[in-house]
Image (cartoon, rainbow, N blue to C red; front, side, top):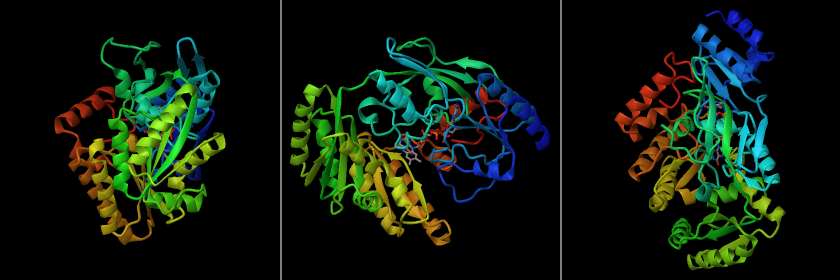
Length: 458
Ligand SMILES: Cc1cc2nc3c(=O)[nH]c(=O)nc-3n(C[C@H](O)[C@H](O)[C@H](O)COP(=O)(O)OP(=O)(O)OC[C@H]3O[C@@H](n4cnc5c(N)ncnc54)[C@H](O)[C@@H]3O)c2cc1C
């Protein structure tokens, strides 16, 4: 393939094409922070219209070169790494909120809209879009759909897949496919919405999304409940749920995470405690005292040794900022940090958390554990120095053992981060071979020339 010809064809289609080696190198990585960069993209194209996307697809077919969509590049599984070269399709300029309809409680957006900005806009109208990956200040709607993002509120409100009601998708041959309609229910044919949510840019290119909104809760409050053992914290989660109490969030931080965050972002966290639950309640103002009393009572019965509550926006934001800072805080320990995402049935949470700790201790690795524990989701964050060959080997062993443990406990390799390239070697361990064959057939049907983010997921 002639790179020069590809670049000049791309430039005829879009006013912004990056071609210098330095610029392309900047797009060789995403937040997965892979150890080795084996290849860089051939070009980076900023698109602003659906027609431009269609034209890039035609060129990719002509030159038989991959297309890798990119929102903010914050996925943590190597999902937008160009390991075989190709064209990075950058959506940061295709970022309009086309419509927010308070009557219909839906919104239509372009893929490059920043998730946090979108939430602020719907909030102004008394509406709520719950998916909130911790880095919502930078990640995009397109990326969060392609990655099936969750976040802290998924315990009560579900994940991205529960809010996507229609997608406009450019297919591998450049046609436009529509997956649903601007209706809240849909029993009309196969559910293509959920097929595209979490497809990691391998089946089609999302150029417009229609999203369901819900009413914004009138009031909210967050608590940090501390425990002297991980076991007590996990038992408290199960106890809340047993008593049919359903907060918006039940998140978790272990002692290492609490201490690491407090060193990085002082927020008065109690660093002598073994574990903390971050519990957010929301709802009608008149229900808040009732919910608070109920939850506090359960937590105390479950041996919570201290409880901090937010009394105003500043205190609320401080607790959430601390919780969301954990990955950044880990970079203060070692030059690199890897974050993972495993999920098990809730009843096995204690075994998972303690098992991960044991595995990391065995391999002499530090680990900070956070997670959306109400969902059974844990994110082990392992600070590491990639230049230390021996440490890297130990990390790889630990990673594989964490996956084996997760599978043994009836879990999955991802509840919300996706698979990308970081976990594809393990997917056969957890997905039944018949299901995997059907997934491969689906990929072939949608993308016979294998140009859409090839070799991601499997
Ligand atoms: C500090 C930190 C905290 C995080 N916390 C959470 C969390 O709490 N919960 C959670 O679920 N995730 C979390 N994540 C993961 C990450 O934020 C999400 O995966 C994110 O939503 C990806 O958005 P993005 O715009 O960066 O997408 P990118 O990384 O740019 O892309 C992700 C995938 O989407 C594809 N893609 C992008 N745009 C399109 C499009 N228009 N059409 C088709 N495919 C497309 C890409 O090819 C790629 O496969 C976190 C990440 C970081 C770095």
